[in-house]
Image (cartoon, rainbow, N blue to C red):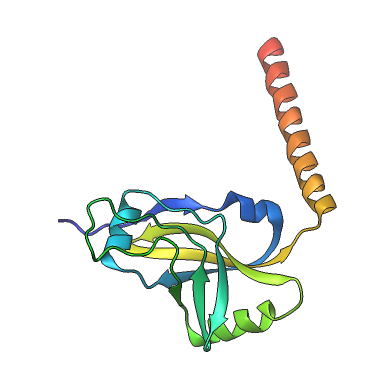
Length: 158
């Protein structure tokens, strides 16, 4: 079998960009079992409730849902277990120092295969207030309306 190359997206967390101000993005490896990788190859995962926590000086990803592998047997994994993130020590120390500040957290943005290995894109994020979320929605809506008006204008006069 030929070795995989490139990047293949498994799951992305669109809600994170809506709920948080993203400050810093880092790519990290993930310690997984065989059935978890097989389940991910089928394109099944959810990052919506995911977050990272410090546990004995290491960073762990929690709340990420990787469903059990259908053809798995008694060796199958728990769907929402704690998974270790693989980072360089200097990256880990930098993230932990910033995440310790009030209002900051570490959230997963996307889960993907990179050259056959599972990677997760994590971000240092600060929670948005309700009015910030409304402002973001309003900006998106305005941009969409402008785009619609431009395309209809071009159709009529083009």
